[in-house]
Image (spheres, one colour):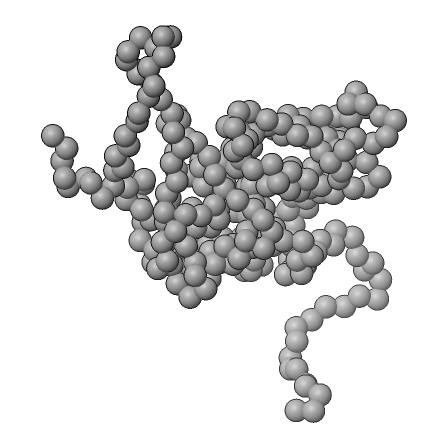
Amino acid sequence: VLNTNILPKVNQVSVIATAYKGLSGTLKKFNYIGEAEIPIWNGTDWNTIDKTTNPAAIIRFLLTDSSVNPRYISTDYIDNDTLVELYSWCASEGYTASGIISDEVKISEVISNILSNCQAAMIPLFNGKHTFAIDKPNKVPVGLFNQHNSFDFKWYPTVGKQTTAIRASFLDNDDYTTDELTVYWYDNAVYETIKSGTTDDDYEIIKKEYKYVNDRASVLKIAKYDLETIQRKRNNFEFSVNLEALNMMLLDRVYISNTTNMENESTGLIKDVILSGG
């Protein structure tokens, strides 16, 4: 007898199978694809319930819904402004999240994978709330580190052979079989097709599996981003700073000045600011 108390959180599925000669009379296993209806952003609030592949809506659901997360949290612990910004970013850029979880996995791992697939990250309990950051292009640097506010400076470039191609594998939502695509770096840009006159042997290819994203367009977009990040961010910096200098968030851009012409240089404190016209 089905416990009626759990009915709002379960689905009943009926199956009709045609018994051909090859069927022994007992259907032991079948598969189906289910879609959840969850709260989505309607431009004002999260009160609209619908099917969605927007990563921000799915992450909010994974964090706050007791039916999927035994350690769910209140929406009061989520920074709504940055979550809505992520929702809009994914909608405008075409990033989606979808997948099948068949093995035991931590919710935090699923969320981390989903965020990495849309150029984003979560800062847990930043000022008491889970806050989201996006690695958008052309971000304005928010700070400068130099010999005045940092110390123990180290800089080293990434040397040796660089990754020049990514072969991405993913579960294709057309038939839910494993598919793959390859992106290449040449002529200072990322391309979907190999350069004329070259073969795969001419590239340093890494293989990468993308989870919880199963449409080809989204996989192609994030694979391009990953490859361009590898190519353009080749310099590594390590230094120590005082806490008051860290007025920034994860994925923020900063300026770094490790050499300065000290001749005729002087330093001091700003005593007053005079504004033109009052």
